[in-house]
Image (cartoon, rainbow, N blue to C red; front, side):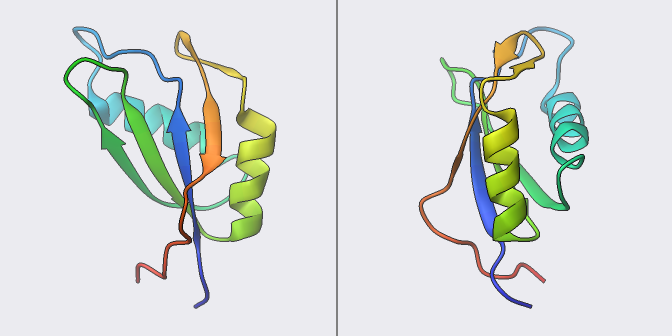
Length: 93
């Protein structure tokens, strides 16, 4: 398998009581998977900031597509900001 591509996702709303990282991960997976195959989602929740996610897509083309189509779109009370991560991720299989 060749290189896959990782997308950095920010602009997510802070997690409030009753909203878990699992729910955020599920909702974001459903959103991104409309545009390509999501291989992995890594949710990071800093203590004082909004969460951010690294989403690994099957191909670089899929990563470019989600960045182009979803940046600036509303999502769970936030506004998605997507950009390609700084390095291409090697196959995770």
